[in-house]
Image 1 (cartoon, rainbow, N blue to C red):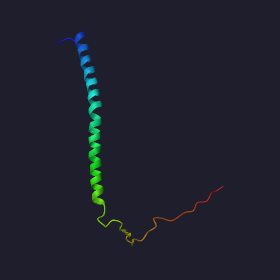
Image 2: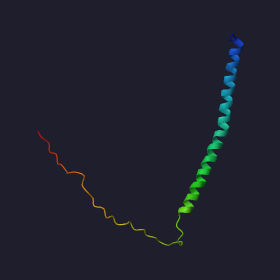
Image 3: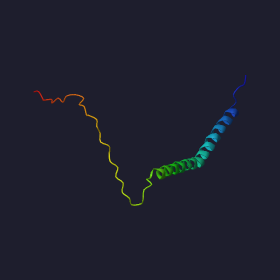
Image 4: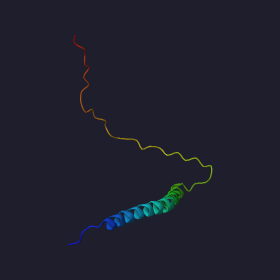
Length: 87
């Protein structure tokens, strides 16, 4: 059975602190680059989608799209009840 030593305890604490500060440094350096890269890719996809959605008509041409007429009958779900105050 091994016993914990005082030096071993401080060595573990030292490793934890070193790992913490290295992780913090790496995160601070690389996280902005990863986020910037991701945002640029999303922006590029958005621009491609917008380019695909634009109509292929002539410049300055006005296009009016009409809504289709609805043939549905609007049914009332219930009766309207007018409440009165009672004193």
